[in-house]
Length: 352
Image (cartoon, rainbow, N blue to C red):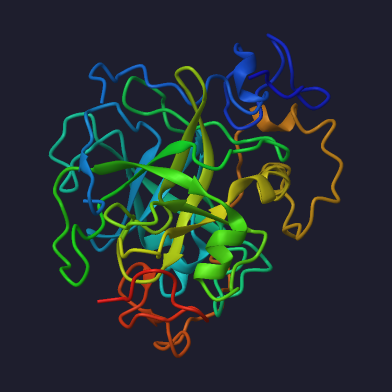
């Protein structure tokens, strides 16, 4: 792989960096950040169900979101003041009460590298549909910029045309339940490699309920999957050696690691423009949040280097009912089902 050309005003050394207050010194991140997708603190080559403990610095863009000291969702660092998560995580939260923990693999925050930052604003996608979890993405603004180090790094945002090929092994991570039906959270961040699954295959397995804003990953035989508590966390793919791009954020699935039930993720390439438009609006002091990518972005690189002075204000959100649909019930964190939904034709194996 070659890198996609950077948009006007963002490429090349010395140009302002979009998602960070620093300057862009590195062309591999599409001009969106000073340096992204790297793992400077990760030395070892390498529960998510079927996963293993992550090493320190292995997933430096991983965030734990907590309310009242309770982990409720994951998130991903995309800039020094910006996180990405799943919109369905915020149906019952007040943004001012959310704390983001970064730089740590430890859920209880005993790690000396852990940094806690308050969230001041949550902007869920205006087209978020809680019934089918379409457009399940939200941008979070932090109260102060993160200082990137060996254990705190942003992942790269993919350009809209970036392809993540079927079968590519990508990294999922989080502190979700280690087994279906057992809500014990692991103390150490869990990670696992999952393969990107062909869209039509996944759509068939889920009774044609997928949209273009979704991407599936996992294995047909089950065994490895994201699970409760991992919602909002990253599905990151190594696009060039040592450089990771965000392909998806954990959104939904049926059960955990069941055969023929891969995880479903929000497809980030469909949101890159909305994410950048939203952040540029916030930084330029705009109060209306764009719902499309109609805003020209040729000159926003200049404003991305200025700190935002906007006051925090909660965003109005659709409240999810306790019942999402006949097959989908809401757990405290992720949207996962308690009963198995059957596809129109049961492929191969029967569900146990």
